[in-house]
Image (tube, rainbow, N blue to C red; front, top):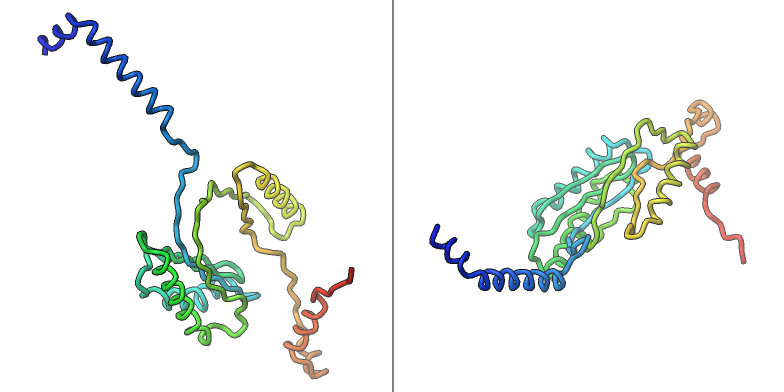
Length: 220
């Protein structure tokens, strides 16, 4: 070891030459190095979503989410299945195995659609917007924020959340801001005795209320 140290001490020109070469190579590598704050990447996913008005998260999970997961869990090419069940909505996300080609992913997508259609009759009759979507993700969620003591029934809180979401959307690089709070609801309790007296069914009341809120064209 001492001999090696003595060798470089006696040959300062060689040491300076090696140091200069390392610095030049480092500078060249630094200039040509590709840098990106958000690296390019891609994830293939297939999502299944549906809604059932008025259903609780537990009902969505037991009567919709679980049957959907069971229908697709044995299909080849699936790496992972995750789901979320909220009030009136459910979303099942299927992560495709890496290395699958686009034709293979398309075939898996068709198999998922067929499996979902195969159990449609077993789902509750009032299920709406049952959709299967083949997604290619090239962006990712930067962060998730939670608001403590947020009251979804308080109009001031909802306006504040809307302003905050609009402010985030204006930040460069943000392509999507998702508000996961449940939409406002109006719950109507029917008088059963009055329905029986006038021989009106609950479905008729529901249809009439739906007609009142139906969007109509107002012309040019």
